[in-house]
Length: 276
Image (cartoon, rainbow, N blue to C red):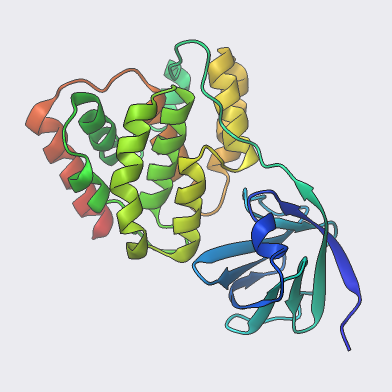
C-alpha cells in the first residue's frame, strides 16, 4: 500500500523527468533533514523542503518531512511522483527557476564587491580562465585544473566555473560563454554528478535565487543591494557560496588584461596550493 501523497512543486527544468511515463529507479545520493539528492540515470534530482536552498532543478515540498530513506537506498521517479520507501512526493504544480538575463548595458563589479573576493584562494584560477577567454587563448588547460578540484559534492573548482559561466551570460558575452562551456562539458565525468548538473544549469543561466538576484543588482548598478546579496551568496554551504562568488565577480570585472606568463604561472600556483 502506498503512503499518503505529499504535494510538491517541480521545477520546469526537471518536469520531464518527474512526469515521465512509468517509473525509473534512482538512488538516494545524499540525505539531509531538509533535502535529498536523488541520482536518476545521469541526472540528479534535488527534493527539498521550502526552507532549503532551492536549486534550479528542485522538487519542493511545503513543509519539513521525514524522508524515510537512507543514502544508497532505492527511490522511484516518474508518473508525476518521487517515491521513497516511506514517503510519496506528488508533483501537483510546476515552478519556474530564476535565470540570469543578459544586461542591457555594460556591467562591472564595483570596488566593494571586488574586494570581497580579492583574497579568495581560487581568485587567480578564475582570472586565468577569464584572461584566456579575453585573449583568445586555449581555455582547456585552465578548465582541466578546475573541474572536480576540491572536496565535497560540489567541488570548489566547479563552483568557480559556475560563477564565471553566469557572469559571462550577464555580460552578454555569448561567444566566450560558449567557448568555456565547450571546454567544460567534455570533462563533466571528472566531477560529481550533482556538480555536473549545476554546471549544466549555470551554462544555461540558471542558479540559486541569491546569485540571480545579485546579477540583477549588478546590472542595475545597485551597489548596496549587490553587497547585501553577495553576503547571501557567500553564506551558501561551507565554501560553495564564496567559491561561486569568486568566479562570478572575477568574470564581471573589467578585463583582467594581457598579463602573459605571469597570469598563467600565478594561477598554476594557486591551483597547486588548492589541490594540496
